[in-house]
Amino acid sequence: MKFLGIGLVILAAICWGISGGIADILMSKGWDPIVISLYRGAVGFICFLPWYLFHFRQNLSYSTRFYIWSLLAGLGVAGNFTFYFLSIQASSIAVAATLMYTAPLFVLLISFLFRIERPTWFKWACIAGIIIGIILLTGAYNIESLSVSFLGITMGLASGLSYALFIFGFKKASSIGKPQTTLTIAFFSLCLILFLITDKNEAASVVTSSDIGWFLLLGILGAGISFIFYVIGIRKTSPSTASMVAMVEPVTASVFGVLLLGDHLGLIQILGMVLILGTVTLLSVKQAG
Image (cartoon, rainbow, N blue to C red; front, side, top):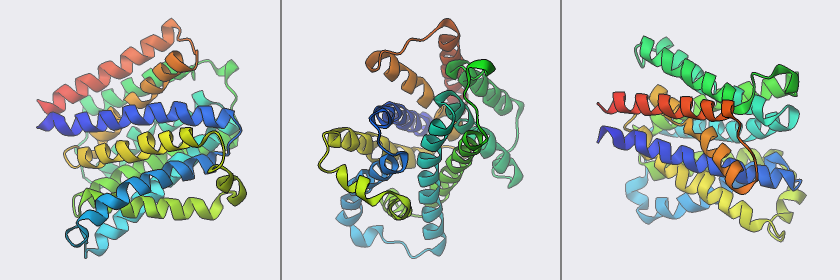
């Protein structure tokens, strides 16, 4: 049963990796990152709402803390989706991915600071292994080939901090209330935030565009299915472990790129994938043991 939580988080990360590839396709077609993020969240919300309404009375919560953590989780997801895509636009996918996946470092530092978890050399080593693997996978080690800007770095770090925020938000909210209630509130707040800042005309044009199928698939995989796995899984997993095992996401995105987008992986990138998967496997086995 201990491995169940980790397994569900890994499944969520695989869905996120595939949705990253879908978002890349949509961005290459000229769609605005905020519009893409809005539809990803809105389709997710439509998936969660019937689940919440099915047993409406049982799903209600009267805890103020529950609603605060759920809203914070939604804010974190909105920030993570949007800042990541904006970082790609302002710099490169290698810089954006590397900075976003510093999230486990933020999670671990916050967990230690608030005494949620005890620091261990093993966890520090796992974080180091994952970050090195991501640098190798994304090519962020090659300084000369990177397109780096202050805005790109800022957006990338903001996406990592947002990632940490939604991990703690979902962890706290799911320990108080039902998963369907947590997800419905979180994604309603996400949609509200992104709707206020999005280009309304472009958002409306999605419905009649030929890319509507991509948007629906992005929302179902990148929000609907994945976050159900994630919220149930994180109830059985510590925040730092959840943040680290979710790092199979860049590996999945890379495989998606090779299989469907015609990307090529070099030996160093494959080594990075092996390092990430090996670290996640080692961590999963130790946590389940």
